[in-house]
Image (cartoon, rainbow, N blue to C red; front, top):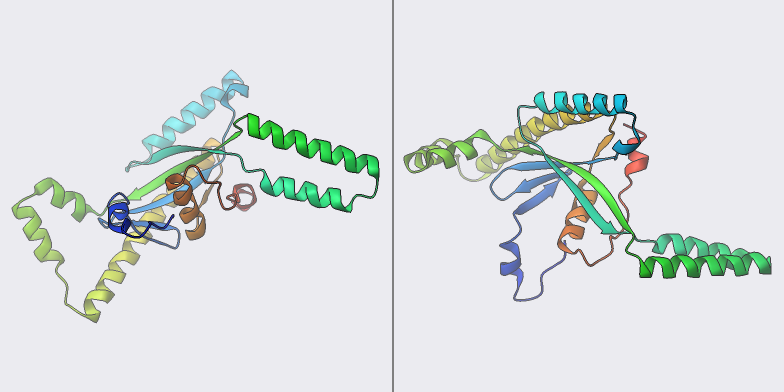
Length: 230
């Protein structure tokens, strides 16, 4: 994500709930975890009525099978064609035929001017799988004395024992989140949708784009290549 300017670090961090991103898992400041899946889209309108009904029923069954909430997000961003233009430029530089060289140059100018005058957007679909430890929600719900009791129960020995206990607790929560993620991927596959889990670099890039909407993405998320392996 974008680094804050000097003197703005504290103010910026107040609006970001992320504590860390580890092995593709987003760790929030309150101890909750999130894992992000990128899902391919389906053109529903091009399906027959029978196929549409099948998708709707499968989607309904998928939602009813979950005992936890999930979040769907559509991220729209301006299409970055710089790498495509770079490839065309390399091809033009290697071309020896003057006619083809001129045609490549005209084509590049057409693509460049078309994108500049028209907002070409790329839509990416995400599913966010959460894991909120029961102790967190319970403490908030009970309040008062419940918060004190929760604090006493969760109190760990100081020093290395505390660090080891925290790491063990985090590992257990990540395992629970992984089970939920697997369940969501299986359910999406049954609908005909392929989903891949974003790794740490891709998750960081996603949040960079979300917090810096005017900037081009550093590189595209390789969804199609990963989906072939799902």
